[in-house]
Amino acid sequence: MGREALTCASTGNTATSVAGFCAAAGIPAYIFVPQGAPAAKVAQLLAYGGTVFAVEGGYQAAQALCQLAREKFGWYDRSDGANPINAEGKKTGALEIWEQLEGELPDYVLVSVGDGSIISGVCKGFWELTQVGLAERMPKVYGVQAEGAPAVAEAFRRFQAGEPWLPAEGPADTLADSIRVGKPQDVVKAVKYVARTGGGFVTVGDREMVAAAQALAREVGVFAEPAAAAAYAGLLKLLREEEIPSGAKVVVVITGSGLKDPHGVLQGLPEPTVIPPELAALESALAGG
Amino acid sequence: MGREALTCASTGNTATSVAGFCAAAGIPAYIFVPQGAPAAKVAQLLAYGGTVFAVEGGYQAAQALCQLAREKFGWYDRSDGANPINAEGKKTGALEIWEQLEGELPDYVLVSVGDGSIISGVCKGFWELTQVGLAERMPKVYGVQAEGAPAVAEAFRRFQAGEPWLPAEGPADTLADSIRVGKPQDVVKAVKYVARTGGGFVTVGDREMVAAAQALAREVGVFAEPAAAAAYAGLLKLLREEEIPSGAKVVVVITGSGLKDPHGVLQGLPEPTVIPPELAALESALAGG
Image (tube, rainbow over all chains, first blue to last red; front, side, top):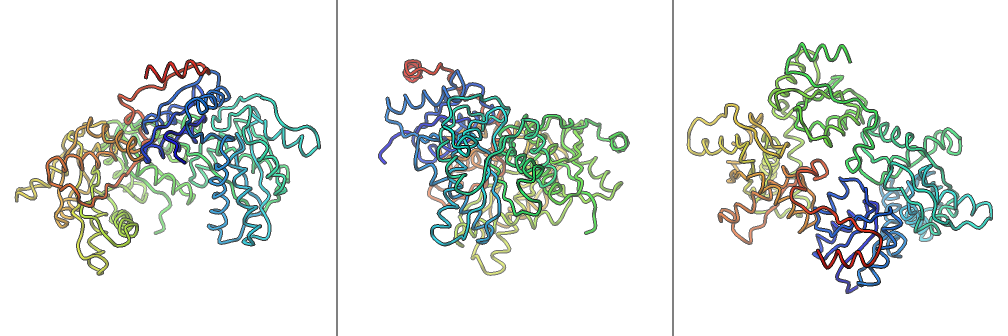
């Protein structure tokens, strides 16, 4: 496309991809993150040689400045909601689910939702599978948002009720930085696509996400950041509410590694036991623990 | 094998695998790490529900206590050097290189070395490929160690010189925790296998590793922890010394993500620029940067 630099506004994960691919391609990346983005995420951006601006005022402010900058400087903008090609990448998540399950799609798919980009792409992928005859029906796709940042879930509720549904800027208060979005950029696609699958939205609290992240790690060995584990917390809630029946075939999409936000996952876990290198000390620790 | 629990002593990466697979398998993991192991690595162990002991006295003390514990409690020990099946897993690294290069093995392979387990397995894999007729010759395999923890490299030098070569406990002083090993557990296999490939050993300093980690991230978009980037630092050194000719086909094995030790990779990199969400501030920052 002849562009000589990429830009994006991101809470962290998109920016990491952009900076990494720009490094591999040998072109500059101009990244706008909210001030206070997790150190591990910013570390990667800097290591990849990205030019990183920590924007005062949160994610919306970072988005707004990114839009001004792309128009001023001609940078190619990969931000969620700003780029129609985005969904073509995200939809491959649905194609991978189809492929890995050997064409047997699940009954339900759960995806954490911030801007609504991933879930839009995933729904698009399932939709296209039905259109080309590779699947008979779509899974019901559910988006999971933070209780403190529920803009897409609330827009969906209004959409289903036949009310005016496009959101104004709403609250964005959750420890899960990857889905801490007050003004979702892909809300239109997310709401309409999820409705088309027959799915819905659910919100979960920060404690539920952390508990879900710990359960995923402890029970199945999957180490997810809290924002990613929100999808699993949403499944647990929908099972409790019997919106998803026990025994259904469900895929939970995990969208970020716990290494990106280890402090979030670790809340309330025990510290390691420090011992001298002596068997008696170990036996004592085991007995006491 | 009828064992009901796993154990290992590890500087972090092995322990993470053990704890994660134990979580998936639903059996307990008893992990011995050196006191001071990086927080991100310990975070994963705790999240996976492992029982973690931070042993005073460093990695050797952790190894010694692990050995006492496995005999006392009957735990299955996955530690480097303690388990002959280990190399059967590590050798798949060589098979993957063969597979991904469609049977065209490189001229050289570089691997960071702490205990010597990974390089032993990788050499074993190449050796077996020649024995079953899938490769005509092995790549020359080079091990890369930290200047401050060079036990295997020095043993190799003595081995090649026909001197008594088995190491006593040596120094273990490097920021690269994954290869901070004073008494390598797989030194015999590592030395003999590397000799069989016609390769060798090289040591690099901490600054070279950090510079290599930053170069890998910035130039090709691979974010490695310093211990893993040591392999690339070793390549640069061997190219400078003309032990590896320019134009050779080389594979550098990257054995740990930079997310596991972001502080190590970040040394000396700039901080993000904090700006208000205004184009004028951005232009000013771009002009000043």
